[in-house]
Image 1 (cartoon, helix red, strand yellow):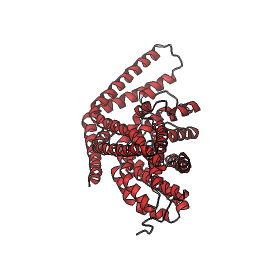
Image 2 (tube, rainbow, N blue to C red):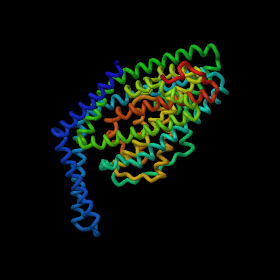
Image 3 (cartoon, one colour):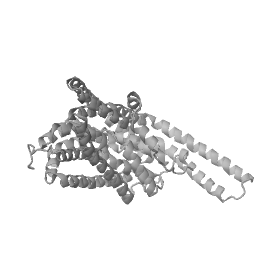
Length: 464
């Protein structure tokens, strides 16, 4: 009941944010927006005249340069004034994002340590881990590629026509390369404390694997550690629940800022973007279920039926973590061995977020389209590969995808300010991708169980 109320409050907050944003746009921001538009038009006209001038030493050229600097100053002043007017709303979403980031690292560490420790010896961890990663990497690549292809087909951002912020004017899009040294530095920690402090999720995952194997290897003494980690994970999940109560307030603040800046016209583009993203998720579901069917045959459909309640929980709360306990129970009922479930499922919440993966390429390229930034196919592939590396270990916590996107798009000359376009509607998008993450992780666990010969008949193999 509480989860349903939270979803209701989020939708109420969205509506309230739209209304408040519209009123604020008309009553407070409209004059400022007019000043910014006028300054932009003047700057564009002056730039056109400057380009046409052949002699840069004449007085008229210097006069135009002075006028341009004055208009740029007016634009900057009004832009700052607009931000100041909206600070009270934007700080609401900022607080929520910081609190969500706070719980990601400890949650990944504790759940993964428990899962790895339960598997047992190093050989078993290596064998099961190898099969698991084969599925995860394949699913990630398909999700990212599908997002990249479909956003290029739909082109939802082209209707936005957003001007680039001043700091990005005149800059070329940089080619991004990831050297072997950079990759190693990103994956292997030199300090666990530093990795936790900086939210370096991949480094935390590496340490958790070592810690979990060592904990399992010391026998009975390790049981105390496993129990403690399991309890700690539940505490973090409880904290996540508390933080989620702030979601409606954050949504209200975020959508108010977007509508106040852009006006109601931006909602038509949002409607297109949301519908095209959900259609893309539907295609991804077909891919996941088909891949599961190849290994599990008709039992893949039984699994989907068994976890439908867990999928609904993830959808209604916008977090796949909320569905974790139910998925765990349903997978064991389905016939999966407990040690496989305890290892693969937590690892999946770090490495196999199919819905989030699709969203990352879809949203990143949407922002590029919105700012009129053309990314060549090679650059899009480069972005895809970087997202594939940097997104691992995000964990199924709401809004964590935005953090990864923010860290990636800057490398391609896409302004981070564009995230304001996404955060207001992110709860709606998060519902779909969280449900997809649950489906992907459940299917992966069942497939690995089948590959390991650890999949029994289960308690409910007949679809009711």
